[in-house]
Length: 232
Image (cartoon, rainbow, N blue to C red; front, side, top):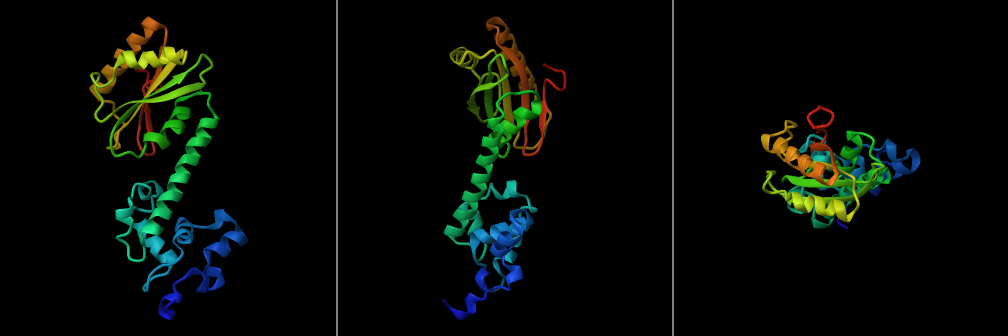
């Protein structure tokens, strides 16, 4: 290893500055987001150590890990000191965290309120850059039986086939469904298409004795519940 570069690896820092050792001594909760990312990337570049580099990367997304998770390998390798392997390590770690949250939400399969559905579906569609429409199928104990992605792109009544929605409800013996879609723009206000589609599916469900229990509009951090707002 080039002596000039060796001073920028974690193992050559002062002990108090080493994220790995800090994790071992003080525990993972003691580490900042930048220190955790520094462990992933291992080293910085000639001008900055791994923590400084991690801080600089985070600063470009306002220190928001959800925004960092949206970055691609191409985005990350633009930072001096981040090669393809380090970029892949960052993306992999954030994806594992996302899946862990989804698994934790799915362990609580009984739905008791709109926030329960938000916790299940936010990791799935909350940070997408395009709209997706999903149906969550429930049994008569409000436990999740199945989740289905019905469409991608703009949401209109013509893009969601009512027959397909309720065919799956019959297939899984569901007695209730919850509609979910995301708004990449971040707005929580339902559109006329959102409202009309909800009414269309609610009316269709009444014929088959399958209740449309709610419709959630989901963004990165928040949601809008038709049921909570009294419009379903």
